[in-house]
Figure 1 (cartoon, protein in one colour):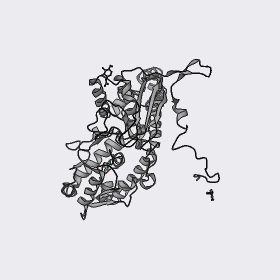
Figure 2 (figure 1 turned 90 degrees about the vertical axis):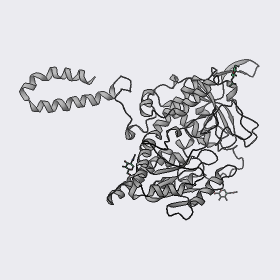
Figure 3 (figure 1 turned 180 degrees about the horizontal axis):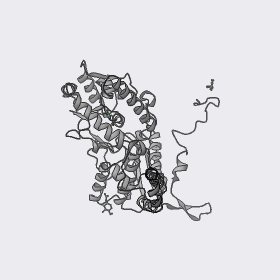
Figure 4 (figure 1 turned 30 degrees about the vertical axis):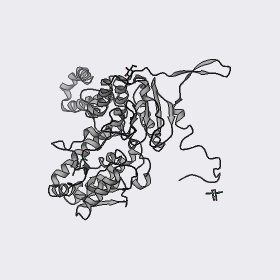
Length: 459
Ligand SMILES: *[C@@H]1O[C@H](CO)[C@@H](O)[C@H](O)[C@H]1NC(C)=O
Ligand SMILES: *[C@@H]1O[C@H](CO)[C@@H](O)[C@H](O)[C@H]1NC(C)=O
Ligand SMILES: *[C@@H]1O[C@H](CO)[C@@H](O)[C@H](O)[C@H]1NC(C)=O
């Protein structure tokens, strides 16, 4: 568009060009630049052009990037989804029986919510209360709702039906696995190939422990990180360096060691032991450090929990070097991007039993440039790009599309219901999300003995 306008403008300006020379040259450039800029905003062309590229400041909160923009911005984002799609394609696709809500769990009761996306609307068509906390359903579905409502027309997405399992490990190994069961979850054990991994609820809000960890909304968390990193960079510059120099030259870990029925206590206890008395160690069980404040340390140690460790997405937002016991046992949506070696290395791997932790820390402390480079690459990849809200919205929409490719059934919106007089009528299944989201039960039934004078909170 811009070149055409310039030609038209030149046609008018040429005679005057001869007379007023330099002044017109200046005006011409000012005018054509102005035209080009203002035209961009009223263009009727699709948003995407081959020259478009992702700019963190401008685009990180753009939840409605087009498909091609999602590809250009986040080429490495969809590997875990493609794995699930390919696995199910090889196994004959997903039958409707595979998404049924799971009952009679031998272990603890899994909270599960069955969801229908139909004609761009989100419906809840099944629900079972259980573990983990109920808010996780709200987080998953709110995140999904904003990802589908941010594009120009959500009706362009395929109709799909699936079940979300909110427990940490949706398809436990031991004696509980049911082959074929297919759910959407925050993570999957590396041996669980059926599960579809969605961004964990931390991309919406951290749920549980919010006060100690200091994380609530993900946007606010990232704002806090940016403010702190900017402060550290300013402090570093005053000392003639950069943010890295202003950070504590130690490895930080804080957490709960007693995590009940999981492998975590042993791993965490072993970490505390491996770090004991070491000059580089700031490892403690308890004595919480707020999640944002973690960015003040040069090295941050990750641990898994009952299943995946929700902390990794937070640690990866810091411009610090993240130490990960490698390989991990569980996969979250962005893990295929983790690089343990080579020119793109973006974290520091150590053995799962921590036996080389001391040696690894000593090596990096005497080669700070390598550690700093790893931190910079990880911040550029994860904070600036793949862990933005824009990326997570792209991921969720791609998830809908790839899931649809292997869905063997055509989801149905309507069911027949009996009216009062025994007549049958067509009625939509379940509830629209807009209604479900405030429908009881939320955390439990309303309490008839509630104290009429007690305000829950008002500040
Ligand atoms: C899905 O259904 C088809 C047709 O009934 C069957 O052949 C196939 O084994 C089923 N797949 C799974 C994973 O249950
Ligand atoms: C990370 O910090 C380094 C200084 O150690 C700085 O050069 C780099 O730009 C920072 N990266 C990001 C993505 O903020
Ligand atoms: C009800 O709440 C008010 C305000 O917190 C409190 O003063 C009062 O003692 C409570 N009444 C009962 C019966 O618990």
